[in-house]
Length: 130
Image (tube, rainbow, N blue to C red):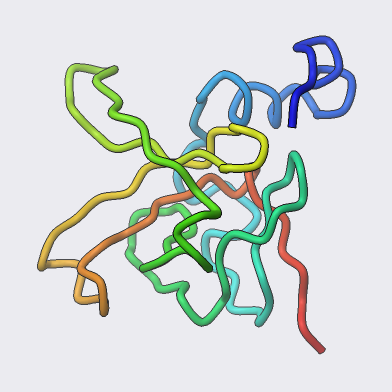
């Protein structure tokens, strides 16, 4: 999905643009979905591609919505991120290249994959299942 920066700015709120298009981060414990337990599918707020299911969501205690795996590996792409003086793995939407958050690995996460996809609520839109 190719759009100009002007198109993105006109379609997204300033906060959505800052996070999705400029790789910003929302403050912990402030996002819409950090503690949501509603069943459904989390989609990219910019393009609507389905990314994560509520079945893969868990409380990591970090203040951001956390998942142990994407809906399918081809829904996301990974980029080495060495900003802020550390090395992390950035997660982007594979369809529109929007910044979603970061993925971390470690046995301490106590998840089926030993991974924590730490996403920004502002990058996601929950489609509820009823």
